[in-house]
Length: 380
Ligand SMILES: Cc1ncc(COP(=O)(O)O)c(C=O)c1O
Image (cartoon, rainbow, N blue to C red; front, side, top):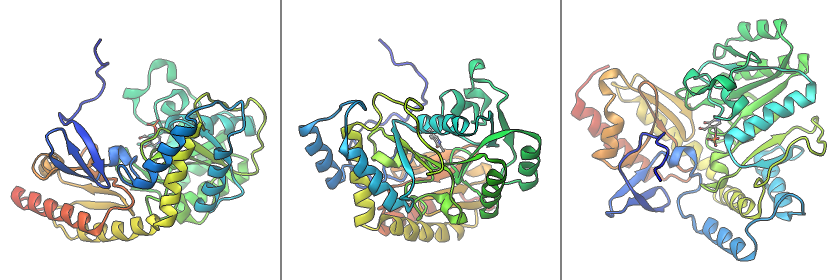
């Protein structure tokens, strides 16, 4: 049987990881500033995480949501505390797409309306409504096409006002920082505008925090920089440090009813143990503060490179926009300097490392980046 060939892959077989370092089957060491796409939040094989999962595995790994799972309550309590939204309610699922799918559905249950506002270059996942709210026609199958989603230009307040005036809007879904869209930071005034229009029209503000959330920007949710609350926060990626888990955190104004949402795997014992280990590590080692500090340092240093067109982002979610002539930089960082980074089309290098990235590793990257640019000898 062959694998269904949907990924262009690097011919590298990673067999081991420790913190921000990973090793291939030939023993070559790589610096991981990609975290398997923003997933590794507390570092590979983090000892506290490994122990918590191992201990749980010896007790029980899985049982369904038909019984009491106290670990879910512990997780809800800890998440409420660390995210600063302890009056919110937690629904657990398995991935980012599933979290957004549930958020959009819940919004529509809540207000009985159908239209969803999403934004140009948004990425919300690959399931039916999540992909319909994703601005990439290539990954939307005919069966997913719907006129319930309205795409608006990024951070255009007038367009948003107009859309609310002309439609029965159920929800607005927005990444606090677009990831796939090239690390575009939503302006605080735009997020505040979404809040006030949603209040005015009884629509639901959905903060897609799958990539930009979980402490990566220095605040738990990057939308928090705007000083307003969303009604639903979706999360996944960093939540389980590699263990598949997703969730939505739901405002107290949205009331649950039996059968409204559901899942077989979501919130199982092992997933909760993984998510608790991540939150405990974030809290005990001040990882949000580390993300803010090391991120700010990286951003400031990167801005000094003349050849770089623009540096965008917050904390450890950074986009380095390069001119066309430097399109090879990412490959060279990997092949020559053994540094994993992410990309966004056309020429953005994305940094999404673990939140406990050290300054020494940041410097290792800056040094390799400087060498790569110097060798290319291009001026902006
Ligand atoms: C902002 C955002 N939302 C949703 C998703 C989908 O998450 P998943 O791949 O876990 O379904 C992603 C994945 O990259 C994402 O970046």
